[in-house]
Length: 142
Image (tube, rainbow, N blue to C red; front, side, top):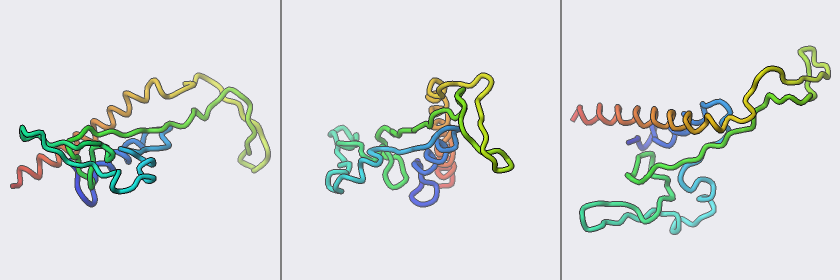
């Protein structure tokens, strides 16, 4: 699944995840840690098991190579910022540009994490479904 140029699977996953409220980060595979590795160490070497099955010895690419799924598990991480509405008085500026204070009111979740897992899984499923449909369409044109 995926395309090598414009509709890369990891780009679509990143776009979907970063569109979720409170998400401030996305990485896949080895993520930023991979930038500190040598290419020879980071390469996911393909292996055959003798039964016609092909896999890689590692999964630094997170299951996506060149924008296309490799058949390995797709793995990524999503980082959430803390909830901005707090019940503590904070300094701010009003519409006139004057110093002011604000304090949260009402019922607000202290943490988005309990709901985050289901939302991230649903968004990932939507992206995978879109790519499956696109792939099926391409296959039907052959």
